[in-house]
Image (cartoon, helix red, strand yellow):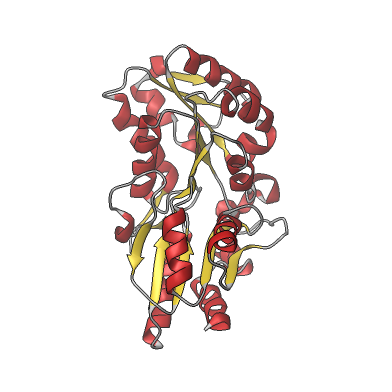
Length: 308
């Protein structure tokens, strides 16, 4: 199995876009080595701006550039983009609906060794609550590249979520990327597993295990958390016995609650949310933390068996 970083997909997408979009610029908060945007700077030094360790100011600069007709991609760690610069994201970008893209790397518990202070497990919740904000959570390198290109072509603010570690390449998700559309990876009638981000590979492994046990498992992958593909979620609620959501994020405010909101309004069914519980993380290797916080295929299988 091949492993690649989603943050690499981000910068590769930016470099591909830059060839045809002279107005695309990249900003960074002095973490370009980590976000990988130094590769963009090497190729397009006149279109790269290091704003220093000032995420709030970086988003304000990005807003100003958008008003002048540029497509700014502001890049930093997810925890800083949402928690430190949340006011600028809300009032300077989302409220005036400016064409700013926020590339957030090092999201989720798998950020690992830097510990809780750098593990963004609440960033989706913060970003999705702002009106006008689109939220994209790609599942692997290729989908990260696709999401970056789709974000550039979308007129309006977009929050893009990437991880730090290398994750499995999942060929099933390499179909056309359309903002707001789910990807049906497996057909099934007994249970639905809904994934976002890097949990897609764990979801597919869980589906394989359940299928071998004789169950018919549907797998929906949602690289767009907002706007949610409501039609696909309602269909899953109607056509299977229950739904398991899987996300590398707090179960509060992320994919699970977005799905539960739709299901509760349109067609109630049993739902179990697999994700980080209401706790902060701790330091460790990515694999150790995914095990510790119950973000594995076996945890999805256990949740599914509770419904089946």
